Length: 133
Image 1 (cartoon, rainbow, N blue to C red):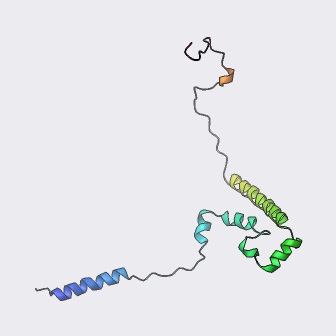
Image 2 (cartoon, one colour):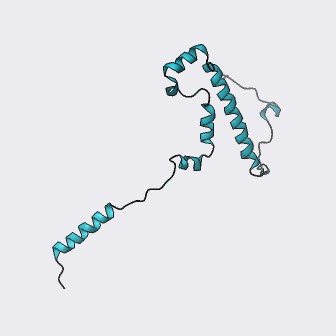
Image 3 (tube, rainbow, N blue to C red):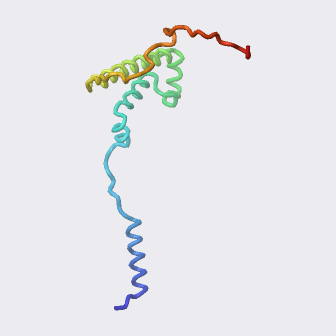
């Protein structure tokens, strides 16, 4: 049984091309879904910090600049203040949710030979010497 060198090289070339150009199926989904999987409330913090104040690039047109000058609807400091208040409320809510979702685990302290403070120990009997005296 003789193997033709050309057919063998053609088969190897065909299998290499088929392997390198494999078709992948596109999956539907939002690009932020992976970030929400690992950090479920990170986007909520981002939204809370930019509701009123927005970002720099979104407020560069003439209408926003005139509104900023006259304080319509709010001055920038007031908008930042309301965003910070909202951010603080989201933080408090997330802390409550995190700590109420699991039971509190209490463990005894490890045995520690250092059970006294330096301030409560009696003074030493020797007097320190400085400068080799």
